[in-house]
Amino acid sequence: METKDLKPKRHIGRNICRLREIRGMKQETLAEILGMSQQKLSLIENTEELEDQKITEIAKALEVNVETIKSYSDEKVLSIINNTFNSNDNATINGGGATNYSPSFNPIDKVAELYERLLKAEQDKVAFLEQLLNKRE
Image (cartoon, rainbow, N blue to C red):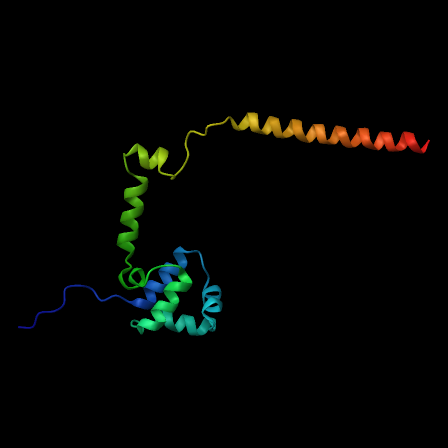
């Protein structure tokens, strides 16, 4: 009886595609960075195995580690996202940089301050223009 490798085989091209999408990058952009055509990159993304040198070039362009490309899985990413944003740890929510739910300023005060500064600038312009008109007369 043969024993089969229980670890699923990674599809390097698919991993590159997913990481590119996560980075918000289009195929054309990554292809341009790599100095190749979009069609060539499409072929790479449909290739199961790649040589290490090509993976290294792509990892550099995507600003990730080579190991990230080789071991990428959607399950890991979803697990990280789930653990980060559904954590009951207040440090993650309030101090961890996720989303600032309690700003340290009143947004209405900031809008009023901006309005007052704009109004003052316009009043200064009007006064200056009036001065110019009075000099001409």
